[in-house]
Amino acid sequence: MKTFLMHPDRDFDTTSVDQPPRPERTSPPKREVIQFAQDIELAVLWNAAADGDRFLYDIMAAVCAGAWANDTATIRYRQDMLKDCLAHPAAVRQFYAIATEPFDGRRNWDFSLYGHDAAARVGSAVRTLQCCLDVLRRLRRACGANAGRFWSPGFQQFFATLERDLDDAYLEAAAADLNNLTFRKGLLLSAQVGDGGKGVGTMLRKPQPRDLSWFQAVLAPGVQSYTLQLHPRDEAGARAFSELQARGLNLISDALYQSAEHVLGFLKALRAELAFYIGCLNLADQLAGIGEAIVFPEAADAPGRFRCQNLRDVCLSLTMGRKAVGNDVDADGKKLIIITGANRGGKSTFLRSVGLAQIMLQCGMFVTADAFTSTPRSGLFTHYKREEDRNMRSGKFDKELVRMSAIADRIHRHAMVLFNESFAATNEQEGSEVARQIVSALLENDVTVFFVSHMYEFARSFLDSGEALFLRADRGEDGARNFRLREARPLSTSFGTDLYLKIFGVAA
Amino acid sequence: MIEQVLAADAIGVCVTFIDALSTLGDKTVSMMSTVMPDDPARRTFEIIRKAADGLAYALSLAEKRGVTYARLRTRVQP
Image (tube, rainbow over the protein chains, first blue to last red):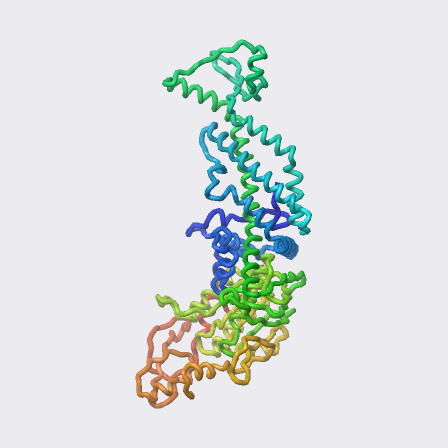
């Protein structure tokens, strides 16, 4: 039985959540997401979605790490489910609350599997299965009550699976079997006498009607039986007896243990997959609280699409607690977008909004924009300028090249790279040349590049290229910045003098 | 800004790639960090009094890190 809430055809991979990577063997995808997470402030998004829940935070991080493997079908599958969730948030939160029970600190004793000897394994497995059945019964009832209101294929399939595999007859039969397996009435074993009078061929038997009810035991004449009473202090006898018991239980303990693990695994997967939608609901609630509108982006099948209307930086909105300024860009068919212009004019914010929108699209989430269409990319990379490292192991510019080289080690074709004032820590002419070479090599591999730069030389070298789109952060007539970008060729000034005048208040 | 510092007769050290600053006035002294003449990727770490020549040898560093156009285009995986 599978949940299929995240992918139409496979389970959601939560290994990075289940086993926190140890320092010596950090899994590559995890590190990749961490690499650019700080540049586009993904943690703000995760925190908003987690709403204080560490598990939700980890799940959102894992979803983002796995975003690049999703095809457009998966993205649309999740978007449909998320639309259902947004329409019926209370029902989804109820499903999640039920699915979370086994992993809740107060009750997880009931759901723990343990034990080395057969009796303990059987005991813990039976108790776990009984508790799981109870959870599944309530889950099915909750889902059944809501089934008609959900239209997305993902939820419909999930409800149908529950109805089919967990119908009442099955649940009752399973409950009865489990009840017998608690062995409250004792354990019935059969064995044959083998060589040397040893018991061989031990079998566990289904309890006879006569053993189950005292009434029948009185009425029906039984076969002649012998009773061996163990002396309470007879330790050797007790050991021999439990050995006999183990011989019988061994036969079923593995099967029971595995079933319990399987059922628990189903609930675990359900909890992890629902957690993504709960995170999205939390995020939507927060955004609604600050008046930020959301829209479902369109994942384009055609290559090289990127088009947005009033695209806003969701993390800036969350941090400021109000709606941010948005941007319109039509970069369909353009592989290079160079952003120039005024300092503090919204360039970095735009760059971050692009990165966030792209990853949210590929996770199957909504974005904060009026419209957004983009082709899923094979990965997202960021190259931001950083302050010179404290221990001065190498210079600032060399550090930037080392980080570029690290990106080159992991990048694939059709990726997206965001550069923010990169390679400017040298003289402009040579910095421009290095940047031009790097960008040219990336474009040749169909990588989409967003480059925020003050290097006029660099921007100018792509002026005649049909692949490039130029955006400029503008200032109004009075020097005020409205934080909006518009399509315009680069200028050789970035209005740094304005800022200087504003800060120092004297003529240069 | 440097003109203001100069006007105040204060002593300042300015690390920059803007060569024009080194010829701002009589009071400025131009110093340069240098590279091995035969291998520009290797720095001598010696700062000597010398007029700015506008070269930062950035490309030699890019070559060393494998991110020039020729190297980078083949490093992207399919």
